[in-house]
Length: 247
Ligand SMILES: *Cc1c(COP(=O)(O)O)cnc(C)c1O
Image (cartoon, rainbow, N blue to C red; front, side, top):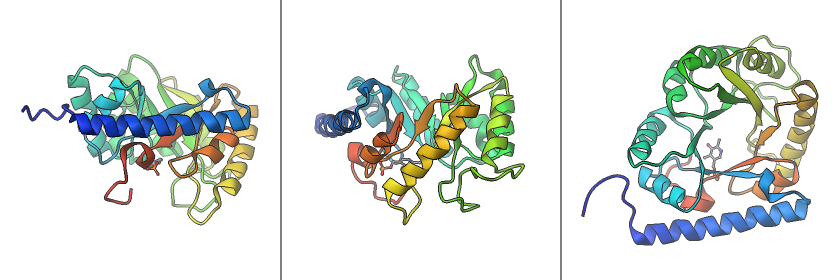
């Protein structure tokens, strides 16, 4: 028995395959119900708290996109996965401090959580050594509550207004403005949250026609997010099992 972190036990592989089949069926059904093409929706497997061996196993099952929310965990995991010869697309989906930008741009292909002008600029500088621009999504605060993550759609605030954030990304040659991301606020019905997000996204695309990605929906609400136009769903527990910690 090797203790390489990239080995996965057969029973775990079967568990992941079953979870994946279920989630794929849910996404296909949701697309059919919404009259959308299945190819419009990318599933991101959110592997936070789970080992790199799970990422490798998911990749072998055809998962191409992986999401993480903490740099400290993600950096090591991405290195282990690369050492196993596997190269999924890494999506950074968590709140990001500026002093972590340098680390994140080394492994991430997409950052979903750009919610301030200062963070956009830190990422732009950090991404200077990359071969390709870093794809960046502006994270939107659906309830407009300041301080809980997310740029504010109806605010001209120079640091946290959505349009100033988008402009900071769009004008950086090292970044590519790919679209918007949001999390349904606690206490909001997902219907109401994603309907509001769809309005924000429509107005946003009128100004930024190339920014078509809409990252919304998790294990509990992905069907509703797909109905309201999500192009990326971020699925953790429905795929990998319940996490022991709440994050
Ligand atoms: C953890 C996390 C997810 C996945 O949540 P599940 O409910 O486990 O599917 C999605 N998005 C973000 C930003 C997360 O932190």
